[in-house]
Image (tube, rainbow, N blue to C red; front, side, top):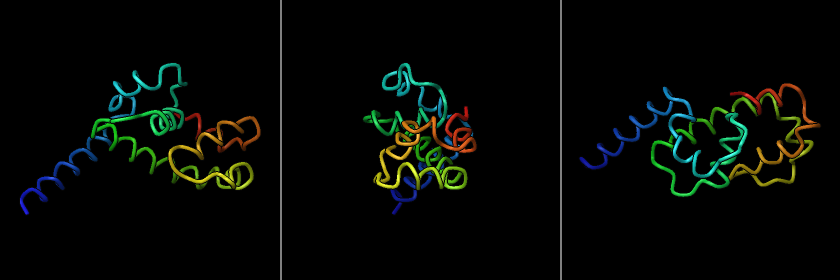
Length: 119
């Protein structure tokens, strides 16, 4: 029982840490290793970490999950129609929807582009 409580406290601490620091700070070693040359926007870094990131640190994993949740909320509002039009056959997960949106970036709506290019 004590280990479970300790585990919950550690997870809570990591999630708070992830909320106060940017993905660039939290995942700096992982970004350096896996995402060299990737345009430094939140969506592109997230997609890179999901696609290429192996054995992420606990802090980076928590940061990635927090950013992923935040990006999902924003993209569902601003990119819903674009996903329906350009990515309807893509199975969600592993950054595949983001990758599809990037591949169709020239055609997607301006609000969706703004979400994808947020720093």
